[in-house]
Length: 181
Image (cartoon, rainbow, N blue to C red; front, side, top):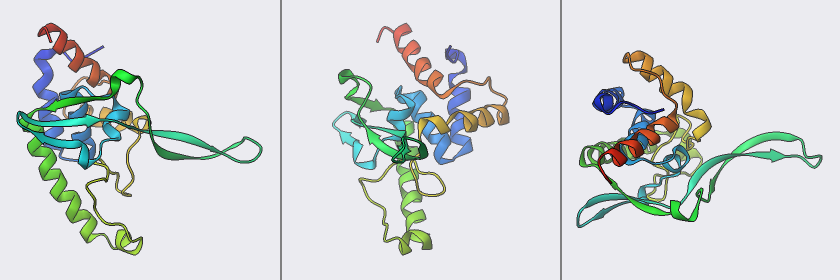
């Protein structure tokens, strides 16, 4: 299941128009072909400039793991950086220029958000190049399990066919295959 290549720009334009952290995250999954958990695990220091443009260095994933008590009962969940799916998953991924421009604007907005947040100042937290690119309203990284519902809402808002977040990655892979990449 993937987005028809003829509809590619409808999704890209909708994500850009929406202008949220989450819509940019979906754009990254769609335009760079990352797994949702890889995209949520991206940090600013993994967006690097090269002689040919920008690329992501994909080295970690952000996942939700259960926290257990002494009797092995689940008492909650926490977000952790985790290894990638396979050894081949560690890679450098080119980032389209249009997406780079959005990411750099997002970076400046995020820096300002940290600067303006009384809550983050009280916690002694500052913006950092090692920080996550995509943060929720509570300044926590997203996990892939929390991405489906907001994506459906964006699709509904812009009159687009609904897809699961992983379909964005499959769409990218399918388009690459058809182009002989």
